[in-house]
Image 1 (cartoon, rainbow, N blue to C red):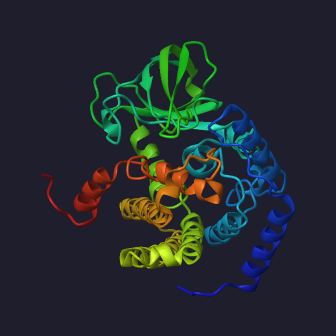
Image 2: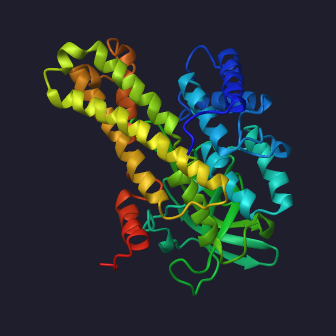
Length: 388
């Protein structure tokens, strides 16, 4: 792997850096886990789309920039360095879209992708159910074929962004006699259909970042199916690969946090150095963020040559989720009692975002498949170990 950028890549970096400098909001947007913040982030998605930066790896015909994965990594580095807003439509742009491009029909791509890129349609993910969290093969929600429609009944839970999202992608059991990963179908459905009830679920910070969704005889056209009936497991595994292994958590996110952590340590060094373990944790955080970056560049190079993301996506997911925890735990150790203040506390200052990040990092080992499940995948599919 060449550890240097081409002239084209350098010019691309300058282009996106200039656009971000001119367009990133001067003041942080409200949290997208509030209704006001959700719509503010939707408007930011529209601004990105106008500059063709909302989905840089997509073909230009769908509103993308036609970039390869290395250019996407460069874009992400500049995006995070500029402290640009978080992506409210990441479920759609980073997870569903690559799957849609692989399994969708031409009509589906033309119908869904431009509206997704522009923020007109914000997507939620419908995997987990009561009794089927990380084990998606245990899904029980049913989609029964009735002519040119499916009739859906059941429940999804822990659906990120679903409180104000427009669409949901998820898996449903279309063969009532099937079990485990057989007989599942990947379906796209608008969240304003009759028979859908959405109930917010509060996060640790008290905001409704998740929702549970109830389906009561919800009719969805068969044309909203992605891939073949009963082949939903294969389609969903493609999405899960992007979620765990590459697109959802770019290394730039962790590089930026590592840089902030180093800066925090320098500003509080007199106190931090009273605990020798803190300096070691800061160094490990920075090195691990750089190691994850190099590994991701290697993966991007392999994918550019036609390789696929396989079970190794599970190793990535474990690594970045535990790295995120380490960095935020270390920051709170440095801050001491100050790190316990909520963002609205008068004395919180710029330390408040570390507590918010720490609370969010607790979910990292759980979403996208728990780390326990990922270790099972690594043991069985990469190391060839027998099931216990």
